[in-house]
Length: 262
Image 1: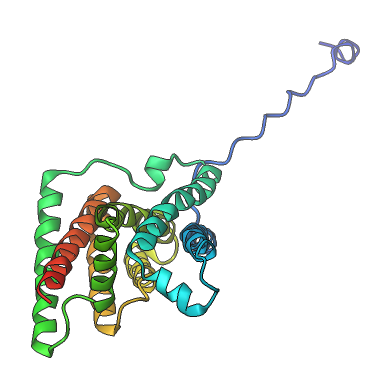
Image 2: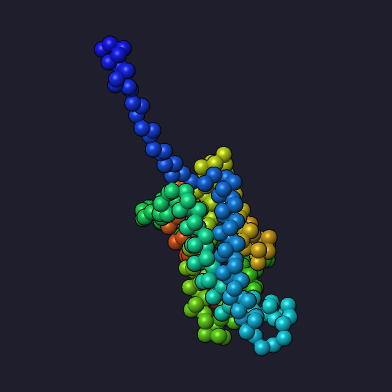
């Protein structure tokens, strides 16, 4: 082809390639931390709204003693825990949606094997019995006194069944979705790696139980480490939700027994 013929057929540049979508990925350390704080605030706001309702609808004059009284009421506690779950779910859905990862994958909502479940139960029983022995040897109570008061209050109001559901089902789901679900996923894929994510998520979970004394703090932290390890080994948060619920159920039955013999 001569130069004259080439000029008659100019080379047309190919159209630009459309921008490729960002591959789905989990939030890293900073993003996970900030979004995790937002989820906690949303959960706490849901719980606080129930307390605010009972305080504001109380015909007695406002006082901090009245707030404290309602905060320790069994029905208030039960409804507060229940109200925190949908707020936490909504707050979790937003960052997970933005990440592009499916909700089930991000939070490790996968079926577990019977082997992992039985091993998890055995490990949890051994750990809890070990702490029971430590508490007994040190003369420390094995059940927090305020929990006994809350259960007795719920029983007097006919709301014991709701409190048991809140403690043994709703609370484990909410707390595990945040700590061993969202926080662990993001932190484990950061510089912390799985080991650091297990420790840090356990610290966060322990901090969510400020109502306990240092002895119970230590027990909660050790259980958190076990749950974190089991989350890592099984690749599923369903295992920790089940174990968390069983642990709370056992503690609730123990507290009810203590309350009935006190």
